[in-house]
Length: 193
Image (cartoon, rainbow, N blue to C red; front, side, top):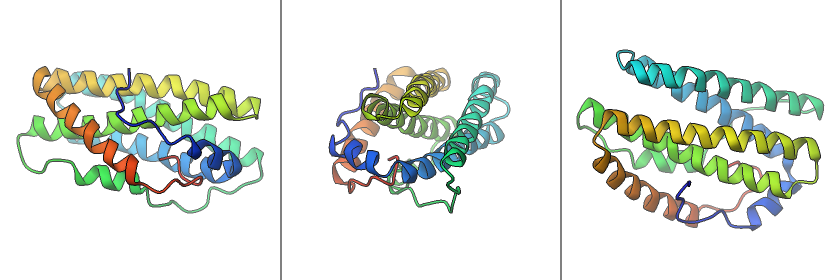
């Protein structure tokens, strides 16, 4: 369903399990950025009724996820700490086409968000299947399901506002580019991506 071309290196989950506190901090900021990204799209495209209707609840869900990750940190006596640079997202942003029509611009951002949600979903699945902490396993299962829904939302919105065949063509390009990023990124247990 996610169509990712390269699965996460299995070593990532082993490293992540050893530094779950760091993963939680990074995860909190990922959720915050996801909510901000949806808000930004709503602000830039307030005239697109379906986009506003679909993304408004996503904003609420992502913010709720942020609060739930904060609760997991608090439970462990850990502070939120400072945000970290997300090399994965920085690389994806390099692939966003500049210029073009307003709908092309929107499509680029919807597809980038879909890819981030897809990779997050895949990583949440790894955590769900491999963590020993039952509470965190359940937590990551719930978030995996939610991120899969968000991924579908972004793809569907792209196809709503731009021709489906062009969305599919560009989506394949995004997937190929993302495969290269994942293949070249250092495996870090303190980063969600």
